Length: 293
Image (cartoon, rainbow, N blue to C red; front, top):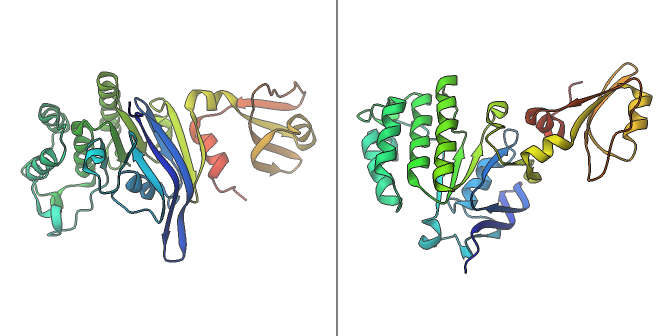
């Protein structure tokens, strides 16, 4: 019986002398929604493109359900990477009309759901007669979402799917994503900069920073063990001694740090120290953000 998961081992990607991915190990289980977050240039899109065999790795391997993905049609039939479309007039697919682009996708994707694609086109009010080169950023996002969801691929990657969408359409996307997930049990990886509104959708979160996966964890469990400790510097130092701390901030004699508690670890009660639970965005900033001077 083949293992139902997508696995990347020792993935390295270099462009010239620049390392974009540094020996990345990643495992995606069947039937989960993952959030992939990282700063601009952290390597998110490169990682997804390698997992989907749209970009050759400099080193390492990627397998889907036990099969290598590179130049393997059987494995690639299980994967869809719906990425941002750049509307360059007259270049490649951008000269197509939307309906032609969707028709091409239906030929390429073996499990294409024509009915779902048609429903999403109506819900997004997307003009299928328009050329891709004439679409707004929001419409381009709608098109990438339709391709991803209607592909019915077991492993579906969406790179910044809500870029350009207003709040109503973003809400509709996440609701539709959850409905499709509940119905199909597919695996989704959503890369996004708009973290707060997507946090509740992510069963697991993957944080990538400077080409390294620095965290991969159940979102709820991560937030349960993330605490912001603030107060007088000497008190903060005392209660956090021996604990894993991040993102130290000092203002005069006051200090604040983020703590990720390990199993069985607790922060002792101490007068003058404030403990606050953190959002996913706050945890992300603490782990990979640039400290304000």
